[in-house]
Length: 124
Image 1 (spheres, rainbow, N blue to C red):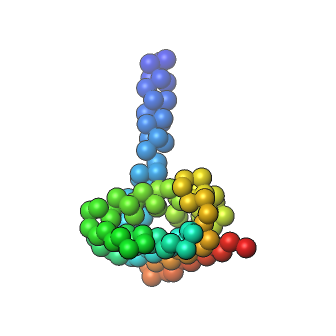
Image 2: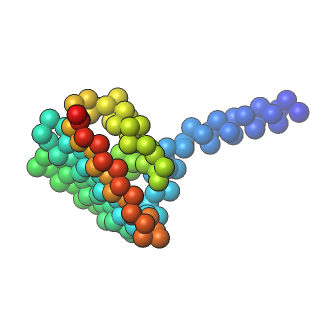
């Protein structure tokens, strides 16, 4: 009995440990995602179009394809982008992970049903 309980606890731990990665792949069934962060006058953009178009731009650097896919999935996981995520939470995540001087956050996400979700935050 103790072994089963321990095995169940380990299994639950493993499942919850990988939740952010699951979140990123879960969002890939969305039709389109646009994330724009402006920090210190530099524009950073992460883009996804279903089924497999990825683009990441920061300043004058542009990445596409598999290289950009990693960047897009990483950002989606970082801010935990879902239909109900609060913009204040996403800004907090960004500030805690390298975007300390964020001036603007603009996110557009269209789900598979064609419903558009928009989050906008401006530094006051």
